[in-house]
Image (cartoon, rainbow, N blue to C red; front, side, top):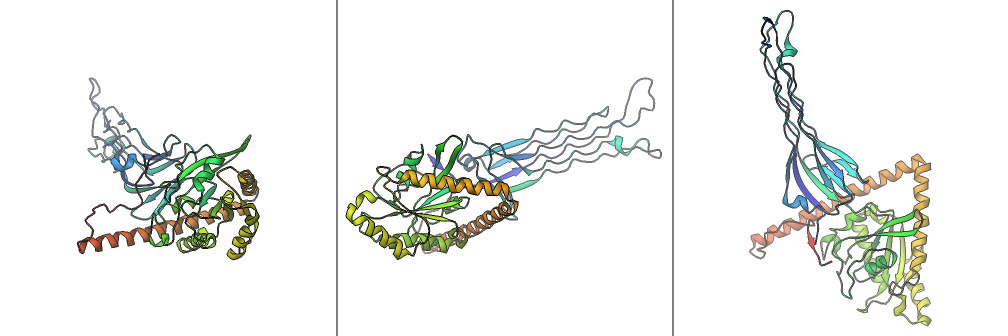
Length: 399
């Protein structure tokens, strides 16, 4: 299976049909006059959020979409038929960007949400519009207007309330398996997760939220190491970050240093992102003897200088997991209610996410350009013969 989170397509709205020059010619109507009809309108191009698709893979193979032009006008004052509009389905959470202006045209976050991205041209006027008392037989008609041509970037960000972050093998995939129906791949080696995994956490009747398991960060990710920051854009929409730390790493590394790596990479990549509310989860407590556990957890929290909320869990057997998900649900519900009741807070939240998305998009573009520059330099030196210059658009994985 392929997970595609970026695609660039060209869309062309339909041109308007031409108006025509025509005169009424009937028996016993010697001065019928002009009856040229108008041209039909060209088709518009829309993008629609579709819950039946979760990837942009189709737009890697078909990169141009053209709406049909409107029909030309007809005699007897009959207008030409307008062309049908075309709709391009994209996953929920897709941002549409005009690549020429870098303008964000829209953000599709709800099922069925529709965005007009290219407007079809209006039809031309037939000669009947130009008749007057001094010009009773006009031989003038106008051509249809051209439809808009745009180059668009589709950028998918998973829509989640909670983003799971942490080093590879911190237990994020196991955690999301425990709290939702998602079944990400789990193994005891790094980088098992190569794509974001979504899971709906169902707390009870009408109480649920979406959690995203984001591929693990490593030291140097903000400079492009490992998977780099290619998937960090998917946490740009979240309300909370759940930071999982393995209290007893199998490689013998220091859990405090491991947690600090994530915090540092977040800060380097996006200061705005690093300011999102974070909850620390000390995971894999089943790997530590009970008499040592309290001292170890206290030491980790103290060394990190952590003043926020801390949970202890074992994602292997589910210990402590329910407490985390109920806490998250309560926090998210309080925030949602405040947004509904307080327009000022809701607007501040909207502005924060807009700033966050702009910062994330800018930083990813900077890293992509640095990556491509390094590839070009390597080719010039004859070191790298790989012609694939795509970055963060395609990952293949075994489900």
